[in-house]
Length: 267
Image 1: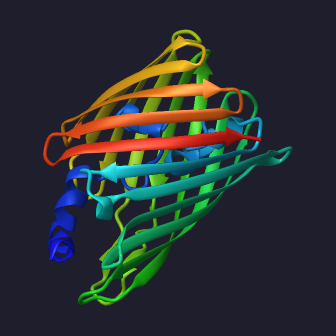
Image 2: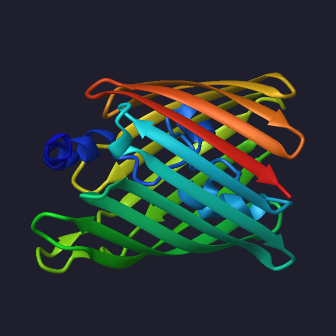
């Protein structure tokens, strides 16, 4: 009975949160103001950020939405830098046996000099509902840029699904177009401020601010706030040689609490 009720509530959850496939504890702790970041999770936020990676990396993330197991999201990412650019893979899964979504993406990014990078990702996304409409899928793509006009300053832009691909052939429901514009300013090696505005088709703009402070070389403290919906986030990160552990807690005004944990390994 509980799972049947969730099927009716899923549209409410999707409308109130609208994070799509954003991933990782670092991003979640800063209200997902992450389009201008450069880390392995750029495979989910803005593929152009992968162009600046120096070593291969593997990452796993788990987000528990509203402390309901059936609304959890699992994400994974892999990036392999080469002399001609960075190759990457991203994976996401959301839902349970009565309703689920999955996404797999292949990406490529490269820098152009020291001040600009570009990234592109091709996705296959699948959708399944056990009642009524059967499973369907769509091929989508996303692309982004990162510019570095001044030392310590990143400016970034990312678009998802500009081709308006179909999600459901029977109902002609289309996946939304999403655009994100943001910046990151690093005051020094310890302190950074992030900002982002996100626009999803047929929804209000979402504004987010994030703050990151490396209290110690191995310990980062993070916080963030967002509007539409009103969201407060907090988190910590631990950086230990080739391992990185990030955790985040989020309070969303409309529905409640989320928790995210992620692990990164650098080869």
